[in-house]
Length: 507
Image 1: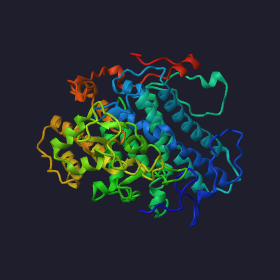
Image 2: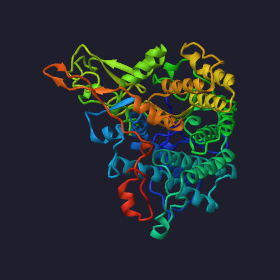
Image 3: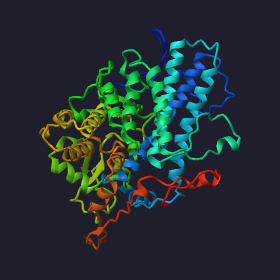
Image 4: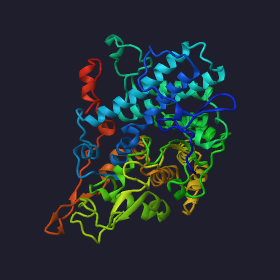
């Protein structure tokens, strides 16, 4: 689908005002530094500030580091990048609290939260701004959803974090908050999402280039399903309720007939998409993250290199459709020259006859200016969560039916409804891996199912050196994945600045 003019200046689709008209944000100026002193004089001011809240999806965390935190940290990928210490440490569970990437990710997520907080505070007191009551409620729903989405990233990555719900004070006695517990953070996320479900529509009209990039009731229900599966006091009956709400939504979500078409760059805003980050190729609103994963012609090793274990998993399943959509093997770059680096996991001696794999989820790097979107929420994920919930609730035959919806699309044989609950659990976990590789889901799945330490400890992954043109004997990679390291260290800069913060155990 061709991307049209329904974009924010930051790359997001238009905010639809109540009525028949659309506000084209190409002419709006999102506010990216909101304060309580920003006067809300008109509906346009408020819509611009909402654009600033959505704008956070263009920072490093959502461009690529969330994928590294999940797929690189799991059994799906090697760090790549020529051995950059940050991502080797991430891969091998040795991340120091002083790491600057962790501090940046933390700060960007809290920046997104702060924008939502200020918008909600100001909107609550805004009068005479030409907003209808309906539109005001919708904006509140969008802001609550976005705040919940960012807090979900934080609690998954660091465990309990400070709950900042105002962001309108510089007073250290107010801003230096202690850490909430994981359950308290999840309770706040749930509370925000209940507000979102109440105030958001199923769709903002009929234009998918609007509905797939905006918070909707379907997106809120999808995130509710995910948080109730992920939280430590999970409730699979709620996962089932919220996933069913998505599956039966009036928005009409359905699986795309072709898995490959989801990621070919020509079918974004499709019926399977619940929420995606839109990009415009060759513009200031382009996706530069793809270049870090894919394009070999610029002569440096890419990040998130597919692991032998992931490739073996596709091959063991006979899953050529999803393997070919998610991984590409190249021997030469776009100009026909051999890949310019020696890959320590696949091709240490840079043998021109040996291919190197790349993360191929987005396929058009376009020199740091890709137009390929990222899916934040899509239906196949929710159907598989639905299967997981049914299985955990003892409804194994129903779980098989849901699981096989996803498998049939890629021509894989049906899983038997007679499987035991434990075997079905393994089958669903593996299906999620094959379906959602490089979509920042794998680490959540391993920790949610309580198997991260077991899976990482059982990996037989190796690296190699090159000795005079001959690869060395395999050098086994050790993954020090005790349960303390299922979450990341609180950034040391934050602890230094806030004496009320405590570090995670094991760091």
